[in-house]
Length: 239
Image (cartoon, rainbow, N blue to C red; front, side):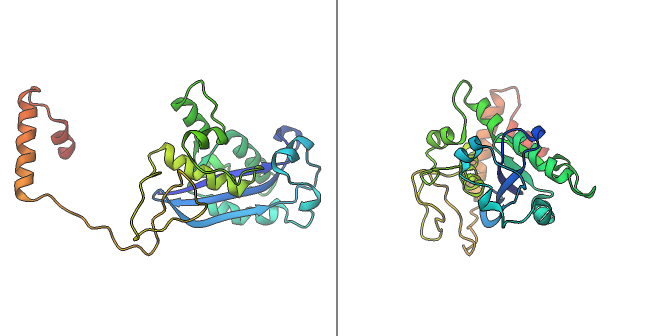
């Protein structure tokens, strides 16, 4: 399964007022492992940036004057995310801005939710932790994910942090130290997700022997005897 963890920075909060995307950061997960493949661009919005937005991400219009327009990087971005599952914190915000940018171009660009499945980690967090703060910094604290480099928002850094948070929220390994057959990439810190090395040897598969299988069947027989003959494990095997 290919997933893309995505974040953007913008000139302001309201796309309806003509605000634009100024940074896109994406990191790739395949089978829940970070591949090291990413997409990252700063973008010239050809308009002023709200002071409140600058205070959040620190990006000024002057620093973007030599950066490409969205139209220049659109094809590369669309190819990178098309068909993947997008993992986004407060997805309607980022999707709304990106669809608005794509909508300014030709008709070959369909809305992102038509070509990607979208998972909103903010909605996930609210369901898992109702009544609590669920912004990215709060989730980093809750799940012990290192965000010490996050003095300002940045799309690529936030995407990398969100990847760690998402993997932890959905059952990722966070504290168990793996052997030398594995490598620990990225920023070191408590709660960092362990990444499997690309060059690792295949994991061994150990199958139950005849005696173990017989004991397992005997246990299922005892469960069936006390449960009206119903054993979910046997039903699952049949299905």
